[in-house]
Length: 139
Image (spheres, rainbow, N blue to C red):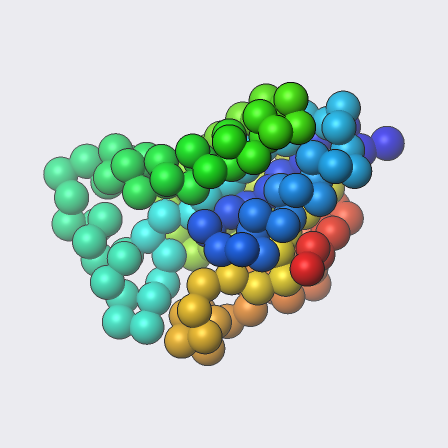
């Protein structure tokens, strides 16, 4: 039985669909939305901007706020509550580092812009191949 689900979200439509899937298909599960801030980008802008902040953790939380607000709004439509968590670093590594604490990971099939996907790689594919727990890929 799936009772704890990790849903990585980057603000993309596919990440939103992953959360919808988790809420619809596992209404009794504890859902944690994970946002990875400071991820690699084509020119390193996001990671560099956070690294240069006086308080990188606070900067990451600030950048995650919009994603978490949207996630909470969606969860309220299902009369559900979610937990939120911010990590710094590479998305696939951060997700895989947290996966052991959950029964499953529900991830969007892709996210971000085409340029981000070409440079950063396919996070969903890396998570799917390397996860220690079942991965559900939502489209």
